[in-house]
Length: 296
Image (tube, rainbow, N blue to C red; front, top):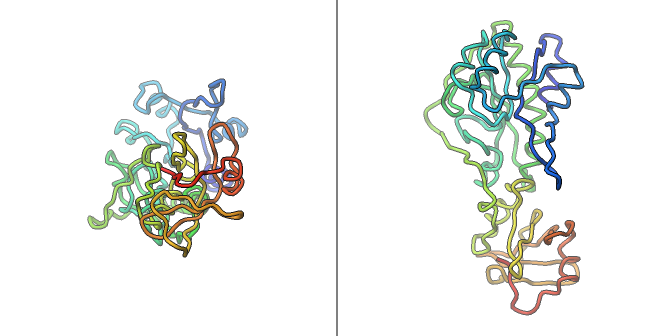
């Protein structure tokens, strides 16, 4: 969304159409819901293209008719086929939320947090048929703060990345910017994080538990088990306290702590099935964990 707004505000570029994924189903009624990008495009009176697959012949014909100079892409979530890549005069330019060639793939922000990286950023690059392998136009850097969740970090990168994308489009338009090949060293792949990946292993070190919870917030959502039911977790805090066995609970009036392979962590908000998120001490007062009960 920030990138589309920035391009719409740019005096040098005309947005002729918006490409987005087909409607998703959401809510209890599983109704089709337009993406925020589509809603903005409709508000601005722009044509919206939402093919089931970007290789569909009808979509390719529409793209030819539009004759775009360049196609900027942000978090589209589908590979662009060669037939589509060849249509714009200046190709397709992707805004990717990592410092390429690090963290190519679907979950660069989540993987950077999970791996304990201290610095990340955003890159603009020319799309090729390979996965995030194209030459890079420009980068911006962003520190990863100790309490950053994937959602919060992505919000910051989306804002700074929008400025980078407009600057890249400016440089392509006036011919002042040439992309440079990615170096062969430092390549890493950011595979999608699944719901199973978001299951907290309390036998891991506290630092890993902290990073996993932050990397999976808000999606797919970190979780553990309590009394056989899934308990969703908010960000935790590593504490300097007496060691607890992995998953062991220590409940006081003002805190709930859980053991890991190293130091305990203090729970933040938790969400039981069918309930709203509440601070962990409130959850414990209602649940009343017994002696010896554990998470996991």
